[in-house]
Length: 258
Image 1 (cartoon, helix red, strand yellow):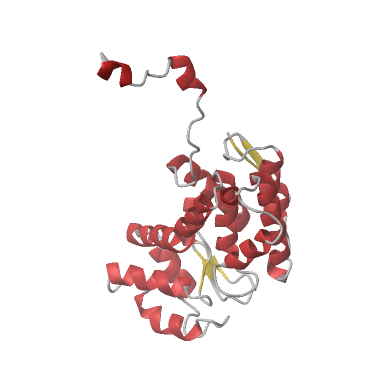
Image 2 (cartoon, rainbow, N blue to C red):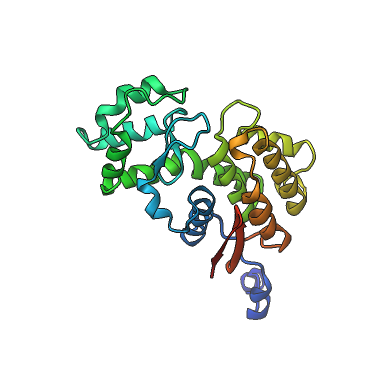
């Protein structure tokens, strides 16, 4: 009888039903799909993010060619890393011969050694599932996984994790003042994240303020609608879990996820 008495009673069904479920992170497959569509609406004016494997153009932002599902750039090193990964996995691919040129133009906006056929060959490579998978893997390694990991460390739910992801996609995570880590540091000067005892909405507003400041430092990114009429809308609606339906605008275009 003593042993039985020491056994804790099971919670009733009613009590269990009232307990909050653990929040679903942005790395949940359905949430990740939403994240990719949100980024694609801003980067490519389309929700069809998988159509962007073949995307490539020079948008005049000083980073050379911008291409692929996350905007890999010939001038910032991430395109070089991507093509190197693809070549490691599939030697002799159509982009492998551009590796010396990609090394030379890294850190510049130059097309030297890439023109005239690099865009054509990029689009050819994009038909290869091995290149598509390489894009997915580099997106996760460099951008998605670090953003989600930091968001969870800060106690943020899916919306906050997405705000981090969108910031690291645009600004990278280097040492310059407008990089993701320094945007976050700027936000921390005025608010604490939940993991430090702060209010999540207050902190996210501070982070988005810092993000807008960073965007306005660069003419090519000075349109802040991907924050103002997208992420801020979700935040004002209290949709911290980024649950559909979602309605937002970027550059004046309206989008919907049901």
